[in-house]
Image (tube, rainbow, N blue to C red; front, side, top):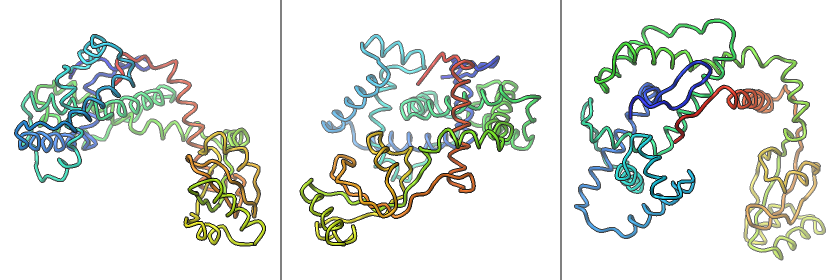
Length: 342
């Protein structure tokens, strides 16, 4: 599990060690330890009893896992797992434990004090991989590393007290790791943690935000609406007539059709493509539909249509995040070289 290269960014190399240290530092590693211990104890308490439903669910999870990673053959799967420090048994056991997770999380079982025995540590590593946590942290670190590479000057030094606290955690959990190297890696992680916000301070100028808003103005419109879903199209059409011809509110028409109208704030850029055009062109007081909404006939009544402005905090947040995301994604494609994906 240690010492495997995950990616390089600019002139820096990131190992599986960095992912584990990041999880340890923010508390997620200890949460995993608790979940794994509880699931192991629960599995042991079952006494090896046959459970066809659990077996079927685990088999389906394994198939889904392989499909998502294009692991066609058993040989492909085995090679993928070995490259990430897992055996087929480690992997399948981790998938199986995840189906015990809801019941296991309710059990007041704490793992023993670290350091962990090697077999338990391997189980936690398996959970780290199959849960998606390794992927999440790898992508976060890559994003932070690219942000740091785009910043001018030297990065800030890590806080000595926080570094000492995290290093003590490493010594407690992973005494096999070299302390000097762990200190270096922890210091880098602490520096990277602020890289994206520091890049935002540099790049998100008023002029850049204004241009981004102009570019995305149509997609940043949002509507204050009521949405009613109906069991079938005839009921939706009848409700629409009640609103348009009889003057009922959508809430009243929906109630007559034995459903409810829900208040909703709809952002154009979050809608499915087939709904964006009709809602983008709708105005206040307009009833749309019946239209297909999440597989059901729906009516949408527009109360207010909000044009995007940087004075609106919600719009400003979306403009800032969109601009930053696009900048980092573009540079990640050129600055990051992946060796392992999870």
